[in-house]
Amino acid sequence: MRWIQDLADLKGILWLYGPAGAGKSAIAQTIAEMCAQLDLLIASFFFSRTAPSRNHEAHLIASIAYQLALSIPETRPYIESAIQFDPSIFDKSMQTQMETLVILPLEKARSTVARVVADGWPRLIIIDGLDECNGQQVQRSIVHVLCSVLLSRRVPLILLVASRAEPHICSVFNAPEICRSSHHIVLDDSYHPDADIKEFLLSRFLEVKKCHPLKFYIPDSWPSAKVVDLLVRKSSGQFIYASTVMKYVGSPTHRPTKRLDVILGLTSVPDDMPYKQLDALYTHIFSSVIHIAGALRILGSMLFVGSAVSYLTPTFLENLLCLDEGDVHLYLSDLHSILYVPTPQLNMDDDEIRILHASLGDFLIDKLRSGDYYVDEGKVHADIARCCLHSISMHSILSGDKCTDTQLNDARSRNITNSRRSDSAQTYSTWSFVYHCTRASTSASESAALINDLFRVNLPDIWFAERPAKLWDDLPPLFEWLKKVCTCISMGFHHG
Image (cartoon, rainbow, N blue to C red):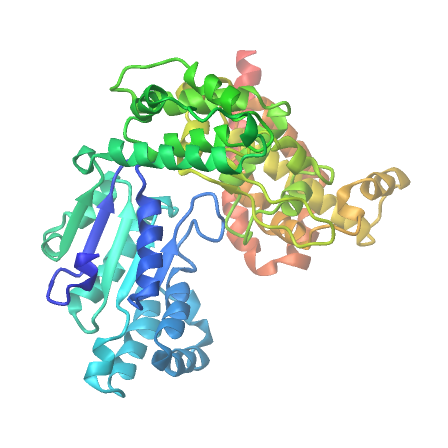
C-alpha cells in the first residue's frame, strides 16, 4: 500500500510471488478492495485455470477497458468511439487492444481536464494468478504488453502482478529493463506466516463456536492452545491448508469436534514435505465421498473443458456429460470443503461451480500425489469427446434427420430432450469435439470406442450446417490424431 500511494516511487511494477497456497490471491483481493474504497483501483483481473472465462487472455484487455470506463468516466467516450470505429478490435493482438482501448483513451481524457484532477485519478491495475492463464508464451506476452506501457511512461499507471514463481515468469521479471523498474516481493518465511495462520485459525474457531448449529455442544475450551499450535505446524506456512481444514471442520452438517479429531489423526510427515500434509487432507476428503467415480468425472471435466464455454454450471455439466438432473449436486455433496457448489433451485439460472484452490487441480493430475484419485487427462478428453459426439448425434436425430424408432426413443429418454436441455452444452459439443478428440488418450480401449462413435455421426453434415468456417481448421488436427491412434491400435494388435 505504501508503494501504491507513493507518487514519487519511480518503479511502476510490483511482482508478488510465492508457492501454491501461500495466500497470493487473498492478498491481491484485499488490496483490490482497499484500493477500490480509496479510489485508487482502475481494474483487476483474477485468472483461474478452472474457470473457462478466466483461464485465457481473450477477455483480459476488454475487462480492463470496461473497468477503466467505470473507474474514470472521462475515458468512456473515447473507448466507445474506438469500438464503434473498429468493432473487430477484440480480435486483434493484446498490444493493439491495450493501445486502442486503454492508453489512447487515458491520454485523450487527461488532455481534457485540469492536471490536478487527472493526478487524482485511480492508477492501479491488478493481475492475479498469471500462472493460471493457459500457455507459457501467453503469460510472457501479458507481462510484456502491460510492462511496455508502464515503461513508456505515457500514462501514470502502476501494475501489481501476483503469481507462482514459474521459471518462464521469473525470466520475464528478471529481464534487466523490467527488473530495474519493478519491486519483487516473495511470500516466504520472512513474513512469519505461522503467526498469521495462527491468528486466522483462532478467528475461524471462534466463528464456529458462535455460529455453528451445534454450538451449544462445543466446549468453551475447544480447541486447546496445543491443538492450534499443532495445526499451525501442519500448515507448513500454507494458508491453503489452514483454510481447507476450517472449511472441513466448520461444515454445518457435521459435528466440529469430531471433524477436528479426524484432522488431528491424519498421518504426520517431515517438515520439509509441506504438500504431504495437504495431500493427506485431500486424500481423506476424497476417501469419504460416496459417489467417487462420478465426482472425479465431474472434476476432470472442470479441469479440462475448453474455453468455448463461458462458465461451468450444474446444468451445463449434466447436459455435457449425459447425467440426470441433480446428479452434479448428488456426486459433489461431500466436497463442499474444497468446492463451491451452488444450492440447487428450481426455475433459477445456475451459479457456477468453482474449485476453491488451484492446488486441488495440481493434486488430482499428479498420480504420485493423488494415487487412487488420479485424474488422467487423456481419459477425460476421451470421455468428453464421446459425450460431445453423443450430444451431436441426439441433436441430429431430434432435428428431423432420418432415424429408427429405437434411436428416437433413446433420444427422448435423455436429458437432451427435456425442457431444461442446455443450448450451451449443445453448442459446446459441436464446437469442441475435435478439441477433445485430439487431446484424448491414444490407448487402444479408449480410442477404439471414440473412433467407433466418430464413424456413427454424420460429421460433414454437422460441420457444414453448424460451423462451416471452422471445417478446414478442424480437419488437419483430427486426421493427425486418427493417424496416431491407428498406429497405436495396430501396434497393439501386432504385440497381442
